[in-house]
Length: 347
Image 1 (cartoon, rainbow, N blue to C red):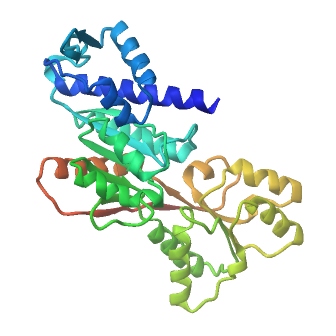
Image 2 (cartoon, helix red, strand yellow; image 1 turned 30 degrees about the vertical axis):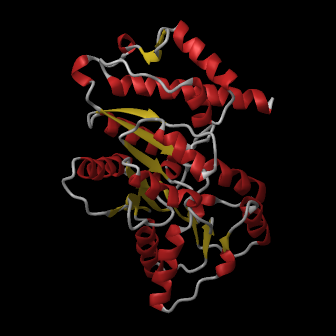
Image 3 (spheres, helix red, strand yellow; image 1 turned 90 degrees about the vertical axis):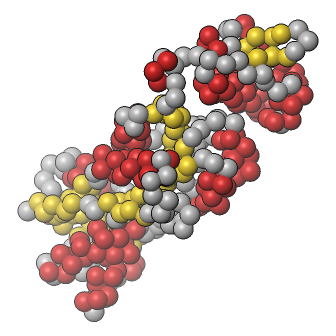
């Protein structure tokens, strides 16, 4: 089975390479590398290359010319003439190998897809087949992309971003785990969110805060929360900042033991997750001061606390604005932009 999966993945790489080459070539036929060169380029046997080229020839994407080689077929160009000079921009989510996405990631991706398409540009969601930076760099070069918007790239890929930029591919990150000096980044200002909520909690006299969950990337608000309390000289119970894969079990234990909880800061879990635990422990979530994303707050039958709004459209617009500045050489400055989250109090 692993061998079969590998063969399919490598076949799709070759197919994507050829179709991208047709797009870039426009009305001109381009000679493909030899089968031997392609096998070395993609690290596969010549038999796999042969099968890929045979199917591409059957679909008329490539044409063999005896004695000369194999060429792309300009007639298979799928772009209309007026749009053939549009840029090709790829969007990558996380490590590029996710098989499903939650609401947050889906809404972020959707906003970026819409905004990039109106650049105007052609956009593709790029799927990766390796976790090795060198292999990923090689694969992305073979996509013939003009630019990449990479949403929440893994820390292990941060050096890869700079290599992509050096290769001539413009790179913008969204929610990068740490700001790269050489790469423009756009993110929600979660630390500021935590700071502002912290000040409001202090005004309300609440300091028994249950934070879910104290690990990257979900705990950026925790940094701001701690800052607000430190400035006020009010200690926080760090044992209430939960981490680990068993956070939900820990919440249940806290509820069962009757540990005083004055507020729950929840940047991660759905209402259903917490509601089930509350049901099992006879805890009324409506009586606890809650802080969470408005999409979660909307599902509470009785919500009391703060909710905040992720403006995905504003995030995507800023990412594409920076992309345009870089691509059009209007502003080579590397910008790091934070999008403010609006906080709403629900009494």
